Amino acid sequence: MQQIVLATGNAGKVKEFARLLADYPFEVLPQSQFNVGDVAEDGTTFVENAIIKARHAARITGLPAIADDSGIEVDALQGQPGIYSARYAGDHGNAEANLQKLLTTMAAKTDRRARFQCVLVFMRHGEDPSPIIAQASWEGAIAHGKSGDAGHGYDPIFTVAGDSRSAAELSDDEKNAVSHRGKALALLVAGLKEKGIL
Image (tube, rainbow, N blue to C red; front, side, top):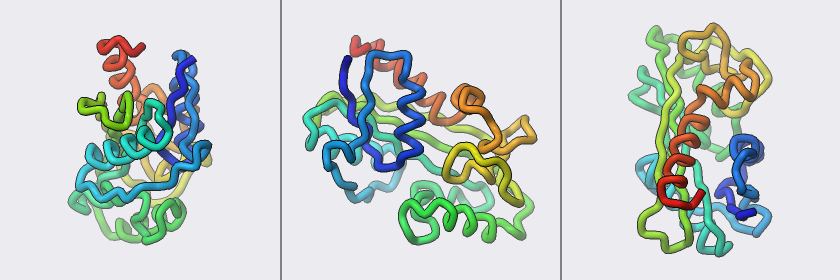
C-alpha cells in the first residue's frame, strides 16, 4: 500500500481524506507524523498555496504528497474570506472565531450567496514539475446562524444550494457526494488514473 503524506495539520481534513480515499491503495498519513511543520502560505490563489504545501511536505518526507487549499467565498464580500478563510479572524485555525466574524460581517447583507472552493494538488516528489491539480466548488449561501454539529470550519453556517440544511447537517456520505472536496477528489483520482499512478 502506497503511503501518501497529507499536507495539513487539520484533524478534520485528515479524517475526511482517509474516508474519501478508503477505496484506494493509499495509506493517508498526516504530515505531523513526520514532524513536518506548517509552511508560509504566501500564494495569492488556492492553487498557489496548495502547491506550496504539497511541495514542502513531499520534500521533507520523501513521499508523494497531497495538499488541499480550500475556503469559502462570499459574493457580497467580493470573494472574501477566500484564501484567508482559516485565519479570517486573525488566529490561524480558530474555526469558531472565523465563523462568528463571518456571521457578524454578513448580518446586514441581503445577498447571501457563497461557495466553498477546493484545490487539491498531488506531488509525486518534492521537485515534481507537473503536479496533478484538481479544483471544484460547492454552491450555497451563508445562513443567519449555526445549525448542525457535523463537519468542520464554516459548515454550520453554509446552507447547501437546493437543500434547506447546512453542510453540518449532512451525513458523511451525503457531504462527500456533493462537497467541493468530494468533487475535487474525484477529479484528482481521475487524474491519478490517467497518469498511471492508480
